[in-house]
Length: 113
Image 1 (spheres, one colour):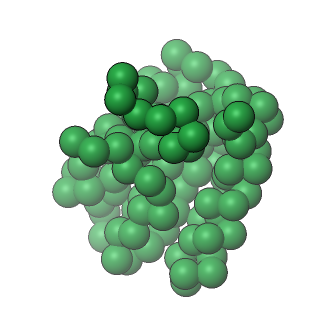
Image 2: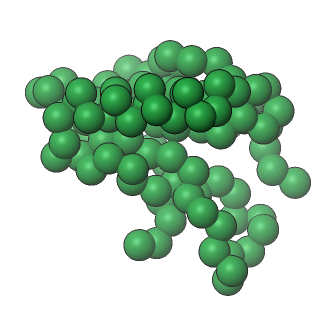
Image 3: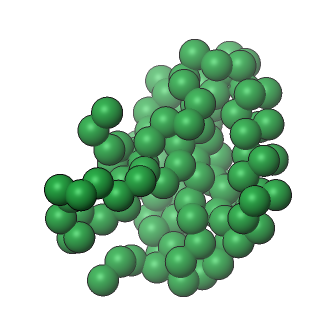
């Protein structure tokens, strides 16, 4: 059974805060199962964007939520913002979390590439 989106987001924000980064919900989605997108801004005009990874055939169901980079960390922050505008038009029930961290730490489980 997958953790509800609202609980996952709360835990992510708390984890980032404990590690010294600032995190906030920019868009609240469906409490139960809204897709979660995370922007990691390094405060130098660049930002990465992470979204749900497509499930792989060999992944165990208990692995939890995996994320993949949709916009690389070297990209201008405007690129991540534009991608999020498109995602929101496609799915208005999604969650959008922003983390500000000069080191660019992600605090997510990333799918193997």
